[in-house]
Image (cartoon, rainbow over all chains, first blue to last red; front, side):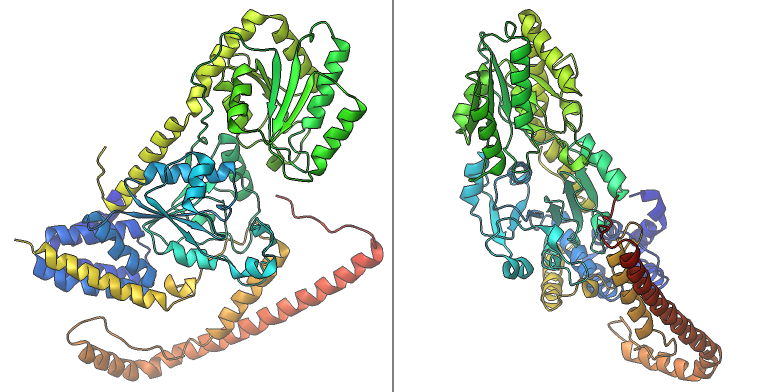
Length: 473
Length: 147
């Protein structure tokens, strides 16, 4: 808010409540927009400046005027902001995720935000399908004890296909009513509303609203309300670039996701393992099959150099995964004792593999033309680095922000380049160790603590500006 | 000395009243006291068509600039007198308003008529283009919207 633009308003608020009301009515009648946060702040000025008898006469008139001219929500937001500013209660946050009932990186992002803010705010996690707080705590290893969960089913999806786990907003028929208006209405009950599932069809009604984008998946539709949010947050600069390109909007902030795979210690002697950790996406987006083929190709071409090295391909998978079937089929036709395929590994085993592995391969994005299929951030690359495992990742998407090429890892554009860089590293163990140390240092940049500190500072600043509230540091 | 408790109670009372009123409203546009403006740039064909008809029906509903609007006052005391005065003033000036606005009303009505004719023509032309496309490229896939 440019305060100087509203200097006459502030002077009017300081002079007399009646003067301020007259100015407000005149402006509203002329359709002159005044931002909600300015209105909230001016109302607070009147309360703090004038005697209670005048304030008590002024308040109902102000609320009535605002309700009549700007709608009930604006009047409600004004009163709610006064409650917060006068310390009647903690500010409330509604954090919405339509996939909260499903384990995922984006959901972990949202829950980490909730966990980081729960001491300063009253937090409600809004979901569309049942999920227990204890479940979320177990999935992400977080303390959410001061948060509550509210489930709001969306009838459109309940009727459509109750058995399908994910609520896919892409299925919404935009020629009909907006099924997410229920969530928009709910957003009007909080001081701060956070949309953590980049669901552009939710219209924010809260005083302050944040739209978190993990990637702008859909184009604009008639239910496109991202512009209405006070703030747009991107999880990487790559995502930020696509928000600008696809939606013509400028993100206000970028916050890298929290990565907490840091090993308590990194063993001095690592094993000759090339590791890959990625979900076995049924569409084959993460390209594990290509990776196996490349490894087999290098092994055939340079058997001496790769002697004693193995490739561990690890990741989560759904049952009856066609892509996993394809990989197994390939391995049975081209067996190799140096390749290890492991699915749905317990976290402790995964951590141990990260600690042991010397090199980490990540192919996601290779040969892709669709920007959505390139890694938006690349959590597993950062996880590997936190364990001193040297990443060789595809030169694209968020990976380019994590790995500093030739400093804390390597980037490649073609399979040939990958093979060359891998063989070079294998042939120079001292250099491999040096880059591993750099990777370890770089990995710290993405620690959960860094994310928590950034979120706390960012949201506190927003609330301070929107509600004139102070926080204990 | 400021009686903060009384102010706090007043804020609570106002919030309670507003919350109760808010509970009865299910339409966002009613809550925000106006229509949600949609950025038409970047919309797909289907969405644009829907938007066009929605806007058209809004124009159609509000085309009469002479339609009476309720006279109210926000004032706690003396509101009745203000309303009566406003009513009297409006009655006195109505002949003049009508003199100017009757032409505006006719103009708006005609404009809406032309808009409707254009929209209907566009629909018919779309139908004909669709039929021609089927004839010239029977197996062509549907064009995907690209950003």
